[in-house]
Image 1: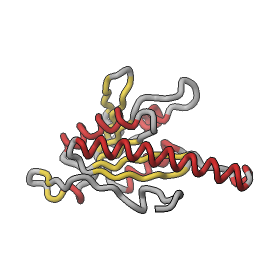
Image 2: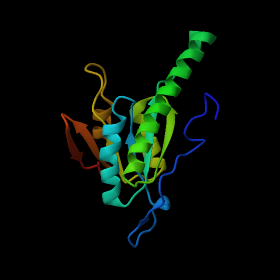
Image 3: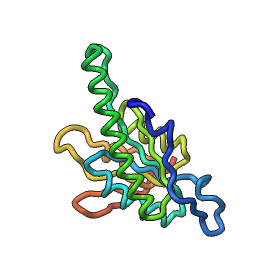
Length: 171
């Protein structure tokens, strides 16, 4: 794949597994986990445990910021390359961690608002669960908090070294 190919064009599938009496895991609604490079392993480990409990595959998602074309060609291209490489690295770490636990997983890189993008991807996949890693930024908006407030499905988040569960909102 070229330097700008994203994981949507080449899903990385782990071992094939079947859920007990539930049909093929590949066709089951997934658990969706949002990953960043610095928290990918911890997030993937927790997401893999939750996916195993559900008998579900995992879809990892990395959200990169939307870049302005006003940056100019060399700057725009350099940032785009850096962002895509970071996203691929995060997804590679997460997929490897899930595969090591025997969980089928693939990853996608999406662009734009993180919380909105994660929720849209989860809704589009009919996800049963959202998993988010620890918060990286001390200041600024928290994607985890936005997801906890607005998700219609259960959310697991890692905070202070412990996993916390918040049931989803009901429509």
